[in-house]
Figure 1 (tube, rainbow, N blue to C red):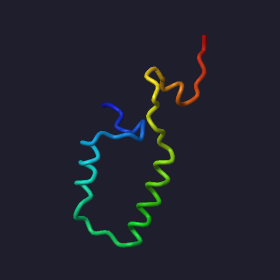
Figure 2 (cartoon, rainbow, N blue to C red):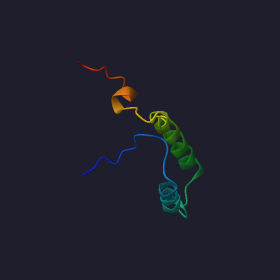
Figure 3 (cartoon, helix red, strand yellow):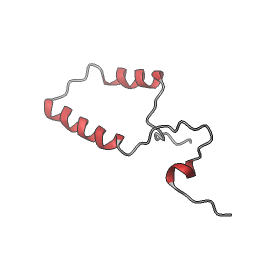
Figure 4 (spheres, one colour):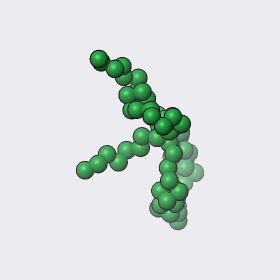
Length: 68
């Protein structure tokens, strides 16, 4: 089974639409909305933006050094 966790912040438009549709029509209290907002802010601080360079590796992102 493949890893389903996000590696980068950028999502496809299709994925954004699926997330939006799954949340529509569900009532939430004001305090619940505040808690969701804070949790999402904390979560997105841990997810990096997708690098602009074409040849960046995961080791470059996490700071692993090459062992020659």
